Image (tube, rainbow, N blue to C red; front, side, top):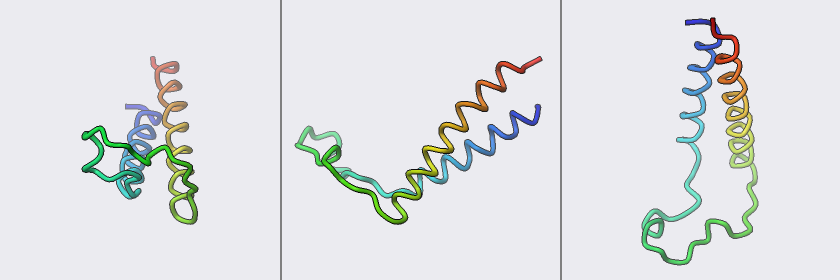
Length: 75
């Protein structure tokens, strides 16, 4: 395994942890019932929610770039 593979592994673990730490935006009981959901209502993220959302976005983009590099530079 190359350095890029180890980096990809570490980023994926961090991404899983960050996503698990975030709070759910919708009630679980309404998820599959078909009731009207406020999930896509105009909600602003503030404080730690905003920070976690930005970290998640950054890790996701980094994961994609490293994955493409790992494939492109594979021997």
